[in-house]
Image (cartoon, rainbow, N blue to C red; front, side, top):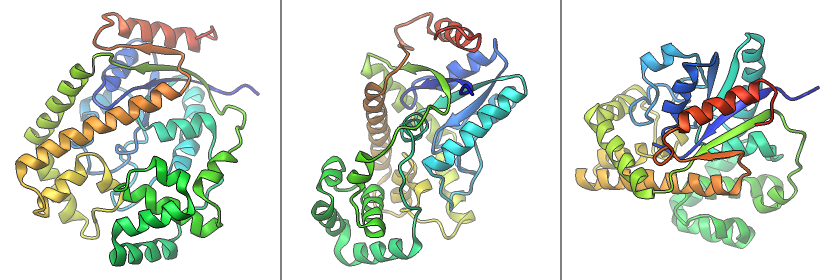
Length: 316
């Protein structure tokens, strides 16, 4: 049985993915599947640049507002939901359009999932206790001892990934890097045609990131943060939702750890760093087509033509 077709639009944050998807939707009967680990959270609208109510109403969207900020959503969850949705969208006689920039999700979708253990509350509590006693630096030193390869590719302040790598080691007695080495490539789950929006002029992207972050603040991002902290008293800075770019910096500001100007600067810098990581991922994966949203004046028409071609069973 042939894998079902889907069209993917990838790119860095603030790179124009949503606008392109909505343009495609004006000409093709598509439904959009969000490839964004931040858009899954309810109540996190402004800081995630979630599509507006009008945009969500104009085109069916999926995997947006599906969990509370207290919950987590894994790459495995995404793969299962995405493949199910692709089949359901085809059954409705429409075309699935996968749009976003969470490259870990895309990697899992296209390269397969590792056979890694699920999160273990007891182990996480143990690691949290160790972090409280010895600091994150202590956990990082331990990771350097048991899994130097993973430690070498992680930053010393990447709490979430350091703790996950140690958790995997404690649960399996095997380094995370070894699990990745043993990963097996299964048959493709989807017949994908992929377009990546990659701006060659990084300064234009950086200006857009700054403009968008300031616009978020003008539209009440900090009010949104106050509401989240009020509505979810159990929320804390180490939860995946609060590790989203912008939210962690806003959390620190509301805790009094930074002043307002420092918060704004850190929020913009963190978003630029996210875009850099996304572009690094994009350079590593085989892409069918790369378009520059700033330099290619006809990039929308090019992407639309590729989508039509793909869904009409012609080579992408």
